[in-house]
Every structure is written in structure tokens, then in C-alpha cells.
Image (tube, rainbow, N blue to C red; front, side, top):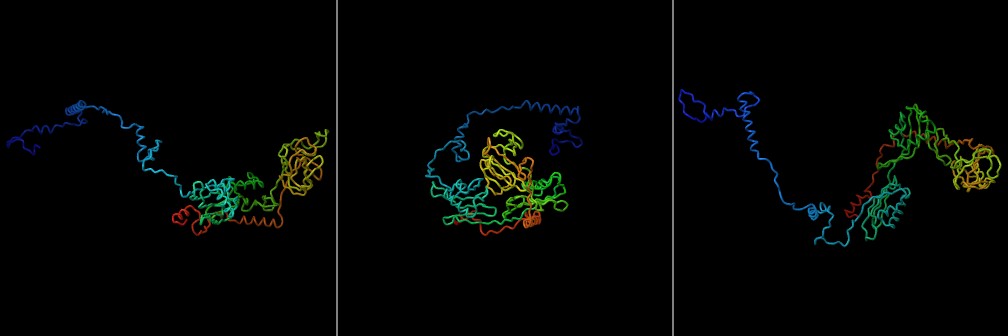
Length: 505
């Protein structure tokens, strides 16, 4: 500034002294208090700082709250009341629970309008009937029975498994007192059959849609390892099939002692897969054990004399041993000498007595043929069975006989009921065992039965084993090509809805 504006005139040889403006410009009002500590400039800067802080504190006006008077326009109750009368009563006003008066814009209805159709899904329960399911869904009893009769013509109602889902479309009813008519029905009646029904021309037209099903059995093989169960589960075997497999081979070998980690299990189960992607696993068909690449055990279920049992590859069936109890009651008297409770003297008791309630069942201890069935002296109602090999059994004091002479019976079959006929002091079973016509102690004899296949039956059995072992493991899991179905599925909800939109119904 002093250079730009000349403040005075100077002689040519004399220097002008600094003006007050220049002197003031040279004064450092805010020196750095970190430098030259203790100097005059430092003390001047500290004094300036103290003066400025004191001036700021002295002139601080302070902060005081501003008091606002007056009550709110609406309290909480009035606000909720006003909100309930706003234009959005369902969004905000509905939580007040107040009923608002109708305005002139509201016209009363003579009756509430109904939906033109109802779409629903019902599930068939265990022990339920098809007609009752329809009635619970809103179908009239007469129409429900007619539909049940119509469906039974395609598949027996007993074959429809529990848990089957049924899609229903109920149409408009003629009056409020009448049930809705069925417009469409669709369900998976069987694993291989779908049924769809649609109303056309006032009546329900049923269409059967067969579903392609592959019945190739599922064969699963794998190494036993540390745990047969875990290895089989990892290979894809269902738990029920593994448990059946263990029960079958457990009757032939000791699983814990005779099975090795390097052995291979061979399981074949009944298996069905549909073109729609569902699959069903059935019972165990074949149980095998392979050691060193050679079959060590091959078991197949086979029918013999009307009884299903497991046979090994040689055609010999499973062994069943031990005396089956002829009654579930406890033993009240054993074989040997005793004092007769009615005659009053000691004599030989040639059998075993089993206590039980009047009318309790009596079972055959093993397979045999009935030789006597009727009254037999002091035994009262009596049955005698011949089991072959000179063995026979007798059952006395029955209240009622359930077999006839010459009839063949099987182990565990009911042959009569406990009573107190003949020389008896109360209801019980007198059981005797005969060897070559002489009574022996029943506890000393164990019955062992083992069926065997021969001739053509044995050849058919071995052919069945060859067919089972020729199945490629995992072949049943390959996808099958779905069958093309022409046109939309009749009765499907989307199909019916589209037809209604286009005026097709």
C-alpha cells in the first residue's frame, strides 16, 4: 500500500522514515507460541490470546429454553377417533374398533354376493371314504355318492391310498340352500393312473390318463466296510430294505462275527418309477453276500405250500425251531407224578397245564394234520395233531374246537379255545406230546421245520435268482422318457380357468 500510494514528498538525498502504517503492518499480532518461548514476542502473543479469550467469555450471552404455552389441538383419544373417520379406515381407522355410520352413498344389499366358483384341494385320510371326503368339501350327498360310483368304475375305491390329494372346482349354485355342483375333479388315483373329470353338457365326463411306470427292480451293491448299515445307506438303499436284509442274512450267518469288511452286500428291492418323476420302493426281493468275487450267500423269497419264506440258492428254506407255546397263559402244572385235584390220589400227569381265561385261543405248536377233533373221555373237547416222524400233540379241556379231522394246520394256527370240559376244576389247557404213541415231557422236545424245493419248483426258483443277479446295479435309477399327452390335462385348475375365460365352459 505504501508503494502504491505516495504519502509524502522526500528530498532527493534524504531517506524517509517508516510510516505508522508500515510499522503497524510489521507487527505480528498472532505469533507462534511454539517458537521463541520466553521472548518478548512470545509474551506479547500470550497476552493477546488471554485478552481474546477473556473478551469472548465476558460477552457470552448464555442459552435459555424458550417456553411455549398452549394445549395440543387433539389428545390421543380424539386423534384416534378422527383417524377412524378418515378416507383410509381399513388401513388406519380399523384399529379403533368403532363402527362408522353409513352415508347416503352406501346402498344396502339384499344378499351378499357369492364367488362364482371355489377351487380347493382335499386329502383322503386313513380310514376315510371317497364320498365322505366330497361331502366335507361342500358337495351334496347324492352327487358325492354318484361321483364315488363313477370313480369306482375306473379304479376300486379301496385302491386309492390314504394321503391322495384331490383337486376340486365347485361351481355356482342355483340357490343358497343348495350345495355347489362339481365342475371339475382331478386326482392321482393310482401310481399308474390319473383320473380327471369335467362337466360338459350338464354331466361330468371322466377321462382316464394312464401313467407309464417302469417296474425294473432296484439292485444295490457295495462294500460292507466298517458298518453294513451306513455303507448300504450311502449306496442309496432305503432303511426298511436294509433292516429286512439284516433280518434275512442274520438267520444264516452271524453279522458281527462272520461278515468281513471286504465283503459286498447285494440287495434287490421292488421298485417302481413313473414317467412323471415319482418313485416307490417296495419290499426286499433278494439278499446276497459276495466274498472274493463269488456269492457266499443268496437268499430269495418264495412261496411254498401257500406260505412265503426265504430260501437259499440250494432250495432249502429257513429253519424254524423251538416249541411254539400252545397258549399265552402261564404254566400251572408240569409233566410228572402229582395228586389229581379231582380223583384225590397220586398218578402220572402226562402233559403240561396252561392257565388262561375262558375262551382264550389255543395254537398248534407246529405244522400237522388233525387226527382227532371232538369229545375224548376225561379230556373233554380234545384235538390231536400228527406231525410226522412218530410225533403228535394233544390239546384237552377246550370250550370250543376250531378244526375238523383230516384238516392240515400250520404252526401258530388257532385250533380251539380254552375251556373246562371233561375232568377239570377250571378253565385251562392240558397239552400233551406223543412220541410213537407214548406221552413224553413236552419240554424235552424241540420241533425243527425246514422246507425244501424240488423238481420244477427248484428250477423255477434258481431261474428267478439268475434273473435277480443279472440286473445291472442302479439301472432302475436311469430316467425314462416321458410319454407325450395330447392336449391339456382335463380337470386341471389352470385348464378349467382358461376355458372359462375363453367361453369354453
